[in-house]
Image (tube, rainbow, N blue to C red; front, side):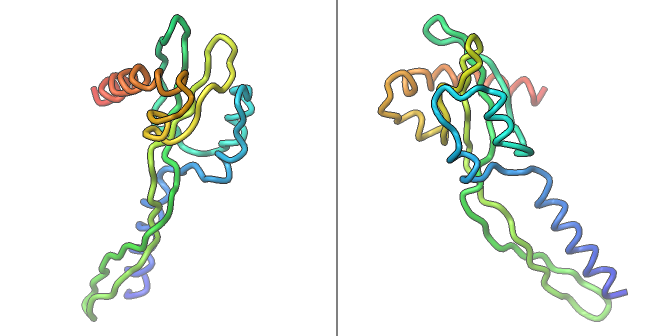
Length: 147
């Protein structure tokens, strides 16, 4: 009985932690300017897309795909209690940051990628200038998703 409860607690923790697949640094390191969208999607594999939206900037149309990039991990704990006492159950949880890739929909090529706040401070003026439009479009997409 005790073993079943501990096993159930560990299984629940594992399933909760695996609900979304975060993007990894090794995947993002493979990106290059003007990479075709389908190649980028292959590199990203099963990473979970958290949002997709389109927006216009300087008479061009763009598609943004948002992910959670794993930047680290941390240990969390829950307690499993039985009639014989309580036992800690430890599990690892990913620490993530918002990451975005931006494609020109006309050419279907990658134009910008990175952590959202890094792109806002990009030395490339064409990237940093488009970020207010991207953020506004993302906020609208998230609001629509909640409805």
